[in-house]
Image 1 (spheres, rainbow, N blue to C red):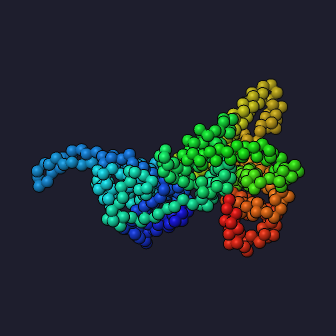
Image 2: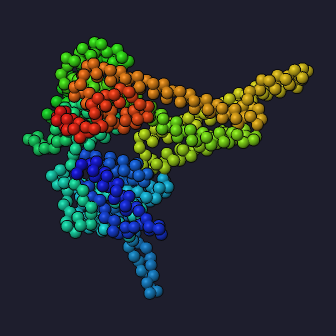
Image 3: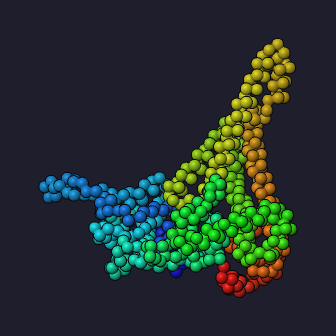
Length: 541
């Protein structure tokens, strides 16, 4: 199976293992909950999948690599304790709690989440002295005398012997206590993941053309050479940072991540072409509708150049869409919080101090939630940005309201001093007419809430501008593609990428796109889904 299928199986297994009966007891007793064993080549995304599962299910995750553990570190250290048996005092050896199990309890305490996944990687590379203890652990979920708390599902992973010389093959007695899932590399599945993680477009464009270079492990005269999914992802991150800093990208850099000389050389050559395409085509101009010369050039370009260009255009537009959808998620979350503040502001005698106190409480509550999810390892990148945006808004609003309150208090004090002077009557009228709304008794809370609404509406207006920009650039992309590629395979790829990517599909579903709807209908995308998949596969990208 591929890693996507494995993810679905693991999610279903964890869900069933955590299912309880009417008495609150687990339907499958912990002793009968077979640990899952993912067996697959290195670097195909086993650890990343566990993080995604924890985030999707809202449970905790504790990860450990078993390669560095000894029997003592896994079981705990021995110590002597005194016990009495039949009235006779006896010195007895006991063990401190295992570092691994202690980490599970620490995560429960720090996050407040009591259910989760304990993920042990490289499980079949443990030392000979630790192997018997691992057998006990896999069956009874205990290291020494200390048990993994209930509600924690054990998932393990390892490499086949051909990929790792340290591998110790499990005997039948051990395997019979595991749910074994053999996982194979699959570029199509990784390509979906790459779109969500915003893998550098040069990487995905290259692999679309050279899928056979996605994963490769072989022995050469110089030793073992390899290219893995992990290597491509790490290369993507360093490429992005090198470009931001204006640093060169050469064979020495690429070779640090792609440990296959032929693949590294071919990617370097492609990356140079990619940069040339990037300079030849002004992406910003095309997405603003100024693409006359670009159309003529694209019509005459080779397929790899056209595919790279389309990838760069999609990357820019989908980035706009992702930003809009993240803003929408943030504002929806924030709106629900501000409703509570609005109810407080309507109460008689509500003051600015009460509004400030509520904002501080909301900010601290969201910080604790963020820390809890981080401690549990159950926080996605999107949720992290959403929570941080909410915290920033609440803190900025709190700070601005305090500044306004202090400033207006100073003004009020000056007016009061005038009111106590010889022109008392006139000064009193000045005080009544010029004291700002935020300092007027029962209206303080309402005025403060009005300020919060203005800040919120400013954010909404910014999102609307972003939406209009994304829609305009999407329309320009369709117009350019229609002129440059007509009804070629590039149009099929364009529609498929927009449909498969979560950010663009959500954006189009939410805000609509007449171009997408029209072209989808023209190509009968909905009715010919299976045929389109076959055609995409036939392109041999």
